[in-house]
Structures are given as C-alpha cells and as structure tokens.
Image 1 (cartoon, rainbow, N blue to C red):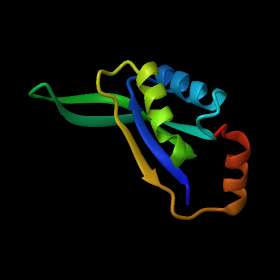
Image 2 (tube, one colour; image 1 turned 90 degrees about the vertical axis):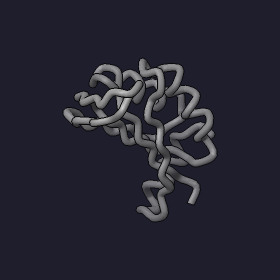
Image 3 (cartoon, helix red, strand yellow; image 1 turned 180 degrees about the horizontal axis):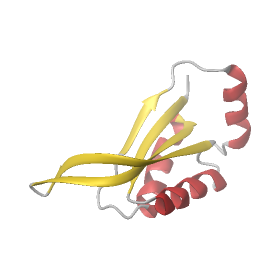
Image 4 (cartoon, one colour; image 1 turned 180 degrees about the vertical axis):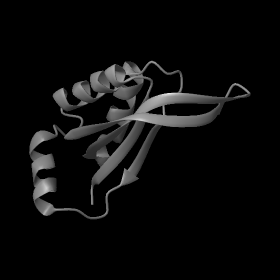
Length: 105
C-alpha cells in the first residue's frame, strides 16, 4: 500500500484546524481528523511537562511524506512538532480510490 496515517499533536484546536485545512486545501492530505482534549506527558529541556493538546490523524500518500512533513513544520508553532507516519496496510478500496482523486501527488 502507498498510504499512510500521520499523527501530529498541536497546542490548540485552532492550530490543528489551521494545519489540517491547509494540508487538505493544498492537496497534501485527503482528510484530517482532529481529536481534542488529550493530555500529553513528555520531557522537554530536562523537565517533565504535562500539556493539553489536540491530535491530528492525517491521511495521505506515503510518497508525499517529505512534502507533508516540511509543510507541517512551516505551519506548526512547536520548535519540534510530533510528526509520526504509520503505514496503512489495509482498508476499504473505495476509500483509497477517493484518496487518489483528492490528493495532488
């Protein structure tokens, strides 16, 4: 399969919507889901931090990962944003057909 699910956290729903909308409008993603009110616990600059964030589930094509990553970094407010890609091994063929139609690869 040549599709991926990219996970990206953001500091607010507004930032998540801005990133997701840009990626879809620019044809880098077929769809972005935003799940709000998550709690992240992480180490940053020697301190353990706890933050409320949103997480984006971004569906795209694997061959677009570098362009997608670079665009997210441009749009994101974090110094080191979480950008993690997972391969999609199976799914509804009609969904993948739709993705092919809307992604500009």
